[in-house]
Image 1 (cartoon, rainbow, N blue to C red):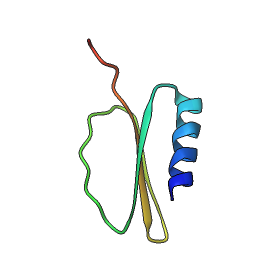
Image 2 (image 1 turned 120 degrees about the horizontal axis):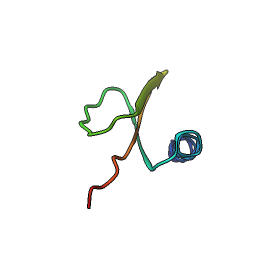
Image 3 (image 1 turned 90 degrees about the vertical axis):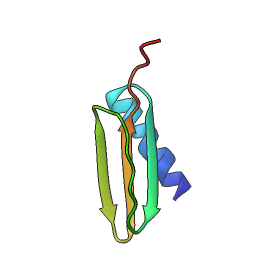
Image 4 (image 1 turned 180 degrees about the vertical axis):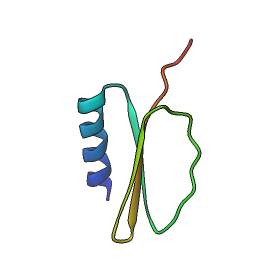
Length: 58
């Protein structure tokens, strides 16, 4: 699962730019994030949520 998370992260950053975080879990999970771009997909019993970090205003 760790390799898949890294592959998702690299592909998203290459396609959309910015920095992406990726969370994967077997079964259900709950997560709250502040973002404008995200994707969630489930295959078999593994769900992954990828989202682009918001640009810092600092």
